[in-house]
Length: 479
Image (cartoon, rainbow, N blue to C red):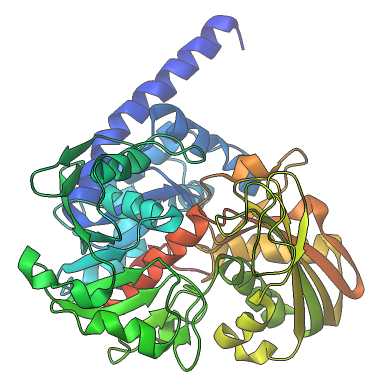
């Protein structure tokens, strides 16, 4: 191909990506339809990101997907009465072009493939959401919820609750939402309404409530009713503590973004979220590590059976550790986080059993905190009930990532160059690094990357949707 042809091809792709952007936005804002290409979200994506998402299809099917091949499917989708679902036009296009040579049958094909969403009635009413705490997870949840703002949005962020209230606090909180050292700048505008103690982000009016305990809060004073309170503080982990939120006028349900104690259900979205019932008013979204490893463990147990195993997490440091050596009640965690690898304990291996009881008593676990600010790695050393090989188990996990009910939780990479920083912003609970897989006889070591902040926050949003009765269908249906 000559230099001119390369430029012409690029121009064509760029222009098609530009045409796609308003269609993608309208589908989401008006119908609640999120469009992806082999799991890569296109909502709010730049033209370059849309092009890159299409090129990445090569990783899964051996050839890139051209924008001119996927665009007719986006056009057909925009004409269908589908609501509240995720549609992978990449998978739909690849499947179609394997059997067809022209566009004549695309509309009929889309009608057939999306029939489940067309027949589904959208009867769920929007619900108010309150973020109690505004740290790392709280701010990322705010970003995710604000990105969903639109006519069809069901999760309406109405308030955040903070301790303190010193002079300048509101401006600093807004600044932390606007700028993030790990995840980059906020995608939009953030304004501060000092007079009314509010933050306005992309048109979303967020009331900032200052309170030292839940007992001080009356949400109804701010027009908030029947709300889901998402506790990001980690202060309370049992029914007695978290139940304080339910005493607040305007609060209806509570979600904890940490492992819970007692009889509270620990939910890993995609694995055991079907356990959530209308009667559950306090639920836990477990931990980031539990969310990362449980989907992969479920897949492997379903396919091979797990007799025993050990989970080692190489985890980025967290705000719980010290910047410099200082007192800490936990062993070793008092030593400087940016300067040391720190061996510590993790309850993730045991917590897996709460979401996946079949693995109860079969796993041990430990953790090493390392001097990176985000993205962690779990090493699953497993003894299986069947013999396998590296290629066999990798092919199995690749198929799970593409076509199973866990496709929104598990990603897969065969890159020989990927490192932790490449996974910042990953929306998946975990990413299988196939190049690191070791398997022989009935033993396997599986390496799973995870963005312990953003990927986990995406899982939390899934639990929020489930608690409020919002069933977000993924299409095409898993094979």
